[in-house]
Amino acid sequence: MNIRGTDVMLLGHAACGALAGMAALWIFVEALNARAENMRRMRVAAFVAAISMAVTWILGGYWYVHSYPTDRKLILGGPWPFAHNVFMESKEHLVFVTGLLAFYLVIAMREKIYANAAARKMVLSVAMLIVLTSVMAEGAGAIIDHGAKIALLRGNPGGAK
Amino acid sequence: MTASQNPPLGRTNAAFAIATAVAAIFNTVLAWAKDLSPKLTQTMAHLTGHHWITHCLADCIVFFGVGLVLRNTAAAEKMDSNRLVSIVIWSVILGGLGLFAWFIFF
Image 1: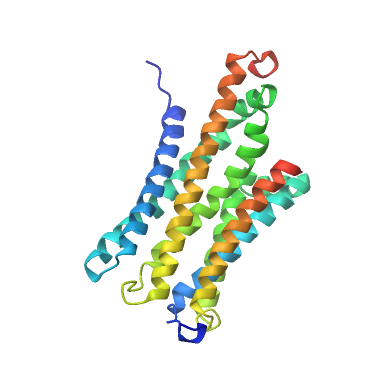
Image 2: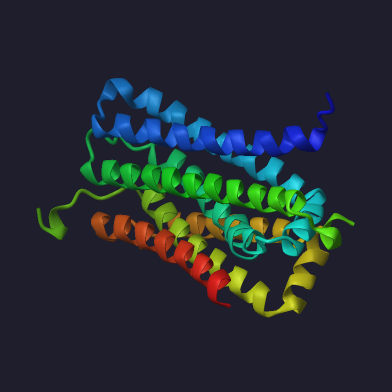
């Protein structure tokens, strides 16, 4: 078995992004029935989402800066150049918004959302935006990964060098 | 319930709602600017070692900067809460679509 630090970093990046999305989904479901009793649980979930997104940025950023140039070369020389040109270019910027939404969710969760309908609506909206953007990022990640994979499988002399 | 009857968001909550919206749009505009100007990308890369890291820091500075400035004023707090929710939702949707459309068509 040959597992490198960069492999762990890439998979950790995807796992933390999924965890942030799941924590946000948890908050969305709990906020539909917000009560004083479940506020603490929602606040913990908001912290989990924010910390997971920060870790996702750090792991993904390190991998993007240090390891991705090789994949980019492969993808651009392969049959799916749009995996980089559209999906990576969009994803690498969209995840900033997901992270900022997760940071904001911690702030929004400071309100007693069971007693304030507007604050509850804001939490529901922000949590759902985190879920949707993190699912988009995971999907884009899969397309980028597949772009590199088929570049290798279908032969790519230029990129493979 | 009319707009004037909507309960207000707290000052910090309202301030950072606006900051999130501003940062989401700023993020997209900066991505467009980097794509249009290799010189800007190069300058940003010089600042931290990589343009992506500078972009991330710039978004965070805008988010926390706008949020902290607005927290010290009553401007965001006075806004209708339903309007604030709409502003956050639409800024994220438009920012996201702006990124995706840009990299498809340009």
